[in-house]
Image (cartoon, rainbow, N blue to C red; front, side, top):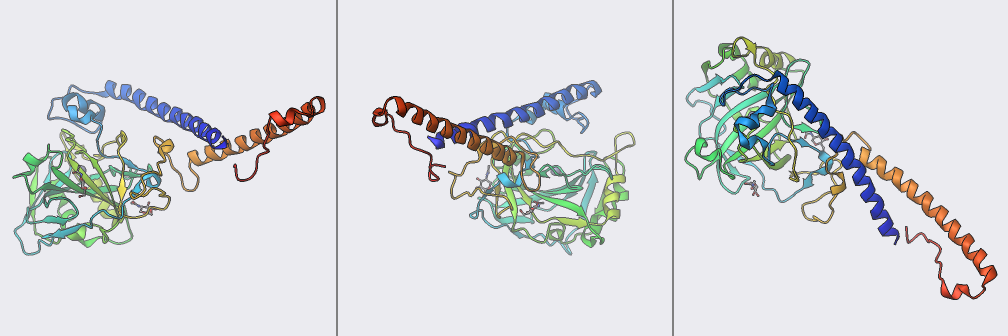
Length: 378
Ligand SMILES: *[C@@H]1O[C@H](CO)[C@@H](O)[C@H](O)[C@H]1NC(C)=O
Ligand SMILES: *[C@@H]1O[C@H](CO)[C@@H](O)[C@H](O)[C@H]1NC(C)=O
Ligand SMILES: [Zn+2]
């Protein structure tokens, strides 16, 4: 019985939490109205980051239920030790033909040869196509994915396509078409020499639609040192047409560049009529029940792929987890205390009633059995 009462309290808790998240949605939709005011008439090929909510009008996939990026709530990810390790081949391009670097108006993109492969980690071999970046400004950190609602200054994406398709164009819309690596870029004390392969020539592509050639280098060195710890989830392209064809891998280890290098990324490129190309990141999208797996144990993770019974669904929808206790935990403690008090008063009341009753009718004890709460019940 006590267990049932406790479950009832948990249900109340989840309703309270549900209310909070729906008010967050309301905030979002009022923002939507603001955005609609700013909006210019958009052609299907001219989309921008200032009117992200209008993407879905020209590109129906953008309103799907498996969109990217997402906020990764570290305490909700499912530890999955059976996720296959990632193994790369052909990433060292040293001595190979030059690579094309391009400002396409949305990002800084480096074309990659399909001799670069992911040979282990997925059900098929995936071939590299291109890598690109998402960033913000000095004031606004511009990663697309967030960890516990926190943005990093920038994010690297390395896009691969399933080798069973003949081209990335063909693969891009297929459910098993793409595998994209995401790595967070932070500011460190030292210049990152590997990133200089790209950033030292960024001025050459400051104009939209401009290209330049750069010497080939070891692309593995743009990724974090450790590829062992990663998150995995099913999502989409983060730009129109938002195809839901990406098996995402977001690394837990990060990359560091110097403040000056990050500033070059944030300040050099132009989009359209001399506008600066910055803040090219999409807002995190709703999970719609998707689960995020992790190849490693995150600090607060209690969920394991091996025991799906440990469902913490009452927490779903709460994404402002802080260090230490989350709002869910605080509410649980509060309700727990309230419950204990109620139980205590009930016991006292019941005990008094029984004593009062037994005075009038000494036999009543045989009919009604009150069992005082013991520690085992709680
Ligand atoms: C993503 O990759 C994992 C690991 O190989 C695989 O189990 C899963 O089915 C893939 N998901 C999709 C949608 O292709
Ligand atoms: C990496 O994992 C640690 C431990 O769970 C966590 O504290 C940290 O926020 C994670 N960082 C990223 C970028 O995932
Ligand atoms: Zn991207």
